[in-house]
Image 1 (cartoon, rainbow, N blue to C red):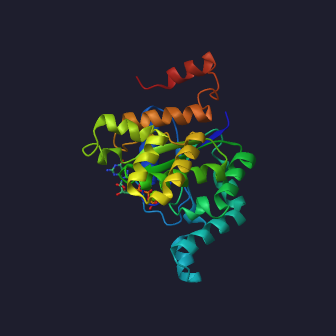
Image 2: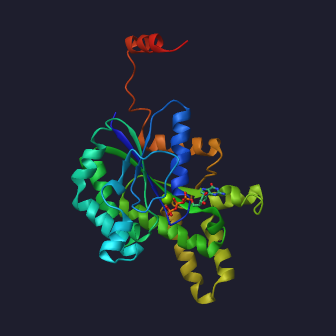
Image 3: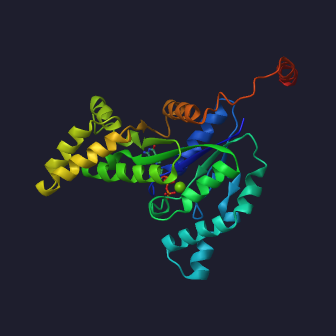
Length: 274
Ligand SMILES: Nc1nc2c(ncn2[C@@H]2O[C@H](COP(=O)(O)OP(=O)(O)OP(=O)(O)O)[C@@H](O)[C@H]2O)c(=O)[nH]1
Ligand SMILES: [Mg+2]
């Protein structure tokens, strides 16, 4: 099989690192292997060790101190530095042939929407390092249930999708925080919303001058098939399992598994500790 790469993207604080931990924990619990590649130069310590860590190459703190940049400029500098030193990444990832790598990305949306550093990285992973990639884009449920904000969130997800040109799954994170607020039947409307209904609700909250624009945006998101989300509760293994099954479909993980020779299976049985 080729290697699988799951890119975990989305605005700041939506739960990307928490999702990476929940995903690796679930993958390990079902007897598979996975690794986390930390691409956030400002990452906090995680309960899982990073197999590859951009902070071994460059840290945001050092850049901010030495170059006197602010956090956003510093982050862009770190990514440009990474792109100029891709041989470092190749070497770090080199040992992980035929493995499942989860890339925890920073939350600065500029990296996805304004400058071409992430697309260049994605191209390198796909074309040079032979990854089968799936981008997951997280938006926070409490943010999204406000319709005008939902519009902006969906547009940011679309922008990332168009820029990265890679298979893409949208995820609504922190679902547990809205279950008390929103009845179950209503929740479905947020995961698979009707674009015209969405425009109608946004119209109620915006100046009539924007009604045509609301409708056009709603239709555009519908045309792109972007308005579907998978629900995520990081602490609920069932929700993580469902998302993993979608990622496996997109990356064709199961199909890429080598069929086992009967001899291998016997060796595994011998090695098992009964
Ligand atoms: N209730 C709830 N809280 C969550 C969930 N996922 C993440 N959080 C919380 O949201 C906060 C941010 O989570 P992170 O995983 O650090 O978010 P991030 O997207 O990696 O943040 P940045 O890397 O700073 O962009 C933390 O306090 C988490 O505990 C969830 O499913 N439910
Ligand atoms: Mg994070």
